[in-house]
Length: 349
Image: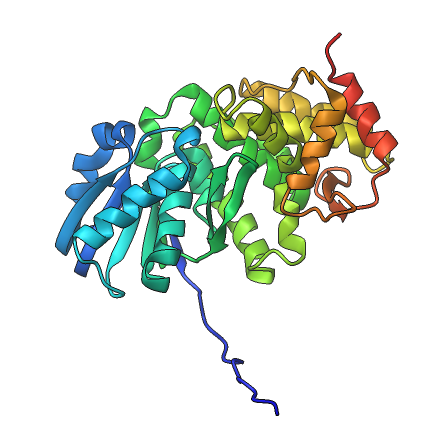
């Protein structure tokens, strides 16, 4: 006997990304703004002057990647239960990538899924983390290993929030912009080489180009079954660096910058990228004071940690490698000897 469940309906998860001064918005439901003390201190009053709701609550979780964990998720969920949120209620992620990921994940699992809106306040979250519906948290095994795909109802990008962004946070966001340019948009990369992103008008143009690039990729592959995995360029190496340093030494974008350099070195050894192209990427990263070096204490341990990456399988590791500038290759055919030789160049001297 067989019973078929015909679940073939197409769900339209489309949404708009607005890059402009935040406009007044009212929600006719219960709304919780999830943020951290730093963002709240700088910008919560501004947001509250723009957002109203039937009932409006503030949920604050600690600031930092090390708090992207189950305890913080529980803090969010407990508040929602205490205030009797229902399936028509909504969350607003108000902060950087950590806040966006955790808020989205909490929204995805509260009563099996409620809506949320992204209002990102860092460059990294504006150009990357807030777009595409990836949500999650970290655990002792690695970064974002627990999570869900849960698309926001809207992304509202207000460049005003970047006026208070520390230089390191700004550079971390630039790393994600460079990532998208190297893998998908050669003209965009060439623009970045000469552009001054400290100029607000130039920066807003760069944000638009980065968001358009990512949106195009996500539209083709929402659940990362194919080409979207290319947006993890630099992340396979970078996540190991974050894990080794307990998420305390480097910002996410800084670890990704180092990871891009490692991926580029691998691509050079495999004949996918020229040394001059790899140097251009490195110089662009260093233009915004991003780190491009790292000391690996134990090469084999670093290599084994790759297997915790979500893109890897029991027997192989998937690497995202640039093909020149503007092209990308997703491959699990990198010889271990090549990877180890690259890692050895970053080993303790």
